[in-house]
Amino acid sequence: SQQGEEDPQALSIQEGENATMNCSYKTSINNLQWYRQNSGRGLVHLILIRSNEREKHSGRLRVTLDTSKKSSSLLITASRAADTASYFCATVPPLVFGKGTRLSVIA
Amino acid sequence: NAGVTQTPKFQVLKTGQSMTLQCAQDMNHNSMYWYRQDPGMGLRLIYYSASEGTTDKGEVPNGYNVSRLNKREFSLRLESAAPSQTSVYFCASSEVRLAGGYYEQYFGPGTRLTVT
Image (cartoon, rainbow over all chains, first blue to last red; front, side):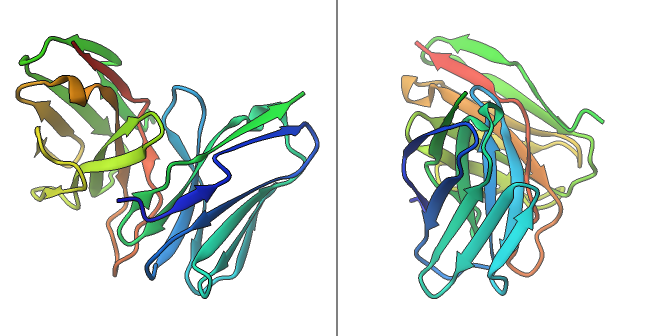
């Protein structure tokens, strides 16, 4: 059973545009994590936001968390072709991954 | 540091054959995990080991066994492979879990397994 569910399932944008993807979950969490997966590769951790945090930044990434709505969003600003990948949220506890958003950035 | 390594990278098995997937990490992490990833299903946890000497079932443990050989190594065994076990298998490791939270996980490159 998946706890986190990403939305949209797929997203296609032009290079330089911002990309926003969302994650909804069902039960209380300790923290929420976002991962990136390039085609055929393992997942890479991007950012972790704790339940008592509302927003966090890391380079071109901005993550928000709304525990009242049980949702999180990942914003990638000024996207690049190299950002093309699948993005997964993982809610803790337990550590359960969603099905991912496939992002395509067109040069 | 190599991080998390997995062997083999690819494997084809016939139904009923057995095999062991190997995983090792050099980051001195206490916790290790095995996932499978199927198209459109995201990652599903098979087994995990919170610390050396302990293993626990995840979401989809049936048909698999694991061994935490030492702090570095965590293997996954398929005793009698079935076509439903065709998947990509990922091993991951992390620092020890604290008070219900988890540290970030580090993933290996994966093993693509096909069972015919």
